[in-house]
Length: 244
Image (cartoon, rainbow, N blue to C red; front, side, top):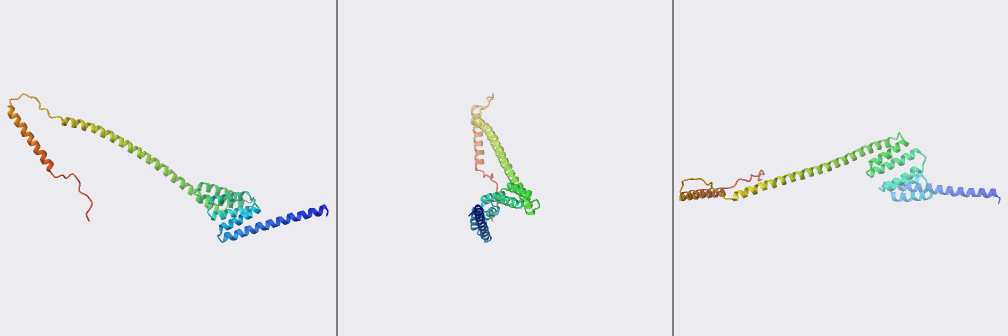
């Protein structure tokens, strides 16, 4: 066998292997798609992974695997596959589709700011895609709403701190006032505890008559105090609640 014949045989073998691999890859993607349509997302993921093992740097299997992971709510893994898919294609529409789904993952992960950025990148690839534009606008609104809520929460927290500070200042002021009032009451109590000293005035009242007058005054004060103590108290207000 000459060199030319040998080279031809080698080329045929390589071509045959390539065609077999391509057929195997396409078959695995097809099987994965069937599983996906049947909503068997774990099974479809397995088929797409087998296809990726055949052709690692291929857009279709990566993108479809991202979709299957997304349906299984494995959002981080899905986003990673979409990112790889976008790198493995030169088509601007395929890049836009991958970026669009990365935006959808970010929405599901409650990150509208990041989602808006992905939708914006997708629009650069496919400017007239209304679905992408609509989701971009929704993400922008959600991002604004989220930031407004965070701002309100922060302001509310600051307001609560200020209210507590005002309350503490008020409590300190009342405590100081009570202490001052208490000192006044203590002093008043001390003064009341002291017996009234009668003024020493010159008078011509006999000592016996003076003692009798003082005794009468003391008796009247005792009687007045007794009446006050026996008087029914009405200090408590009546209830406004009706007795049904």
